[in-house]
Structure formats: C-alpha cells, structure tokens
Length: 126
Image 1 (cartoon, helix red, strand yellow):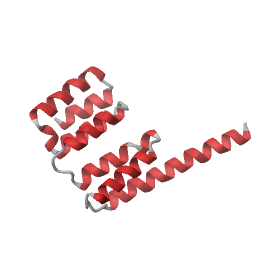
Image 2: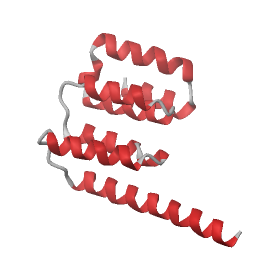
Image 3: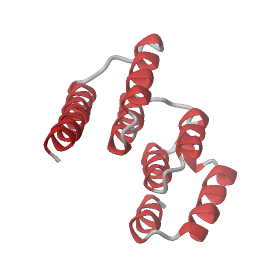
Image 4: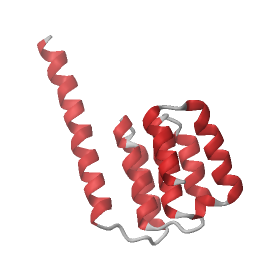
C-alpha cells in the first residue's frame, strides 16, 4: 500500500491521490505507520497540507517517526513556522525528539536562512 501511495506522489497522479486516500482511510490503513507516513508525504508533495495534517491526526499511534515526517514536510515548501509549531506540539504530547527530529529542524533552519540570505543578496545587487 505504501509503495502505491509513493508511486502516485512521484508521478503526480492527482485523481488517484483522492482514491487511495479514501481507500486507506476507509480501510483503517492509517494505523499502519508506513502507510500514514506515505500518505502524509504524498499530500505534502501535492501541497495539500490540510489533508496531510488530517491523516496525521487520524493516526492512532503517533510515534516519533510520524512526528518527524510532519515536521520535515513543511520547511520544504517554506513553511518553517508550521514545522516549529508541530515540533512544539510534539514536545507537549511528551514525545521525545530524536536525532532525526533535530536533523530535520537543523536542515530546515539552514535552508530557510539560506533562502532568505539569497533573496537579500539578489535584491541588493540587482
């Protein structure tokens, strides 16, 4: 199931995205960590963060892996504040950040800062 979801995301199949999402929700596959992670990533690739968040909240077991997937999705699209918000929610829910969490946040922070720096430099020298 997770492989099919990843294929749909990679190939950009918008219509199929809805079918597989509905199928996974109706059959309860979101309780499978691999399926939930794939659905969250797929929705993020289609810039549908509301659906990604909905899958996240429907997942019965929110492990650090699923939290990390949510945190990692936002900065890729310039949504650093959302990533920080999810990280704070993670801590409030007593889920301990692991090395992947911290690496995702650091990577996101540097990408965000480099993008800002690039915009400032481009603006000043153009």
